[in-house]
Length: 246
Image (cartoon, rainbow, N blue to C red; front, side, top):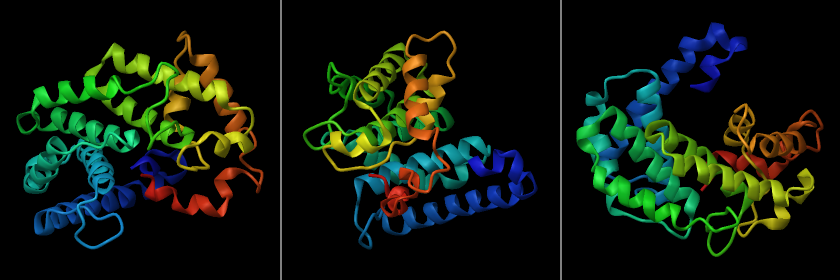
C-alpha cells in the first residue's frame, strides 16, 4: 500500500493495489476456514498473528475504500477474538490489536463494542511507565516501543485522543533519553531487538510546533542519517526478520 503511493513506483501503483486486495481476500478466506491466525505453526491462534494481520487488513480495506461487507465473515471472527483476548506482557502486540479494533470501528462501527474499546484504551494507557516505556515481558524495549508508537498513531487517527498523543510524546522522550548512537539500540532492550522502525518517530518530527518535535528529529538523525552505510542496522542479517515483528 505504501509503495503504491511513492512517486518512483507510480507506474506500478495499480499492481501494488492489486496485491493488497489479494492479501485481504486470502486473509479473509483463511480466517473463515480455520478461525486461526498463524505465526509459526499451522492453525495456531497466535495473538500477534491475529493483531498485526487484522490491523493490516483493516487499513487496506479503509485506504483502498473496499466494501467491508465483502469481508464481514472473516472480520467478525477477528473482532470477536480481539475483544475476548488480552496480551499485557507484550504491549506492542496488545496495542496492535487495539489499533485494529479502532480502525475497524471506523469502517464497521456496528461490529465493534465501543465499551471494550474504551476499557482497553484506559487499561493500556495505565501500563505506560512514568518514563514513557510500555512493558515487554518485564521491561522496556526500544524496538518494540517504536512499533507501539506506530500503533498509537493508528489509534490517534481514529480517536483524536489527547491522551494517546501524550503517550506518543512520552514514548519518544524515552527513546531520545537512551539513544546515543545506532550501536546503542540493543543495549537497552528487554527482548533483544536491534531495530527501531521510523514511521511514528518521523511523523512526530514533522509536527511543527510540538514540544517533542526536536527529540523526534534527533532520534531520526541518529538512526537514519547514515542509512547508505552498508554497516547500518537496516542491513544487518537479523533485520530479515523485521516482517515478523511481534
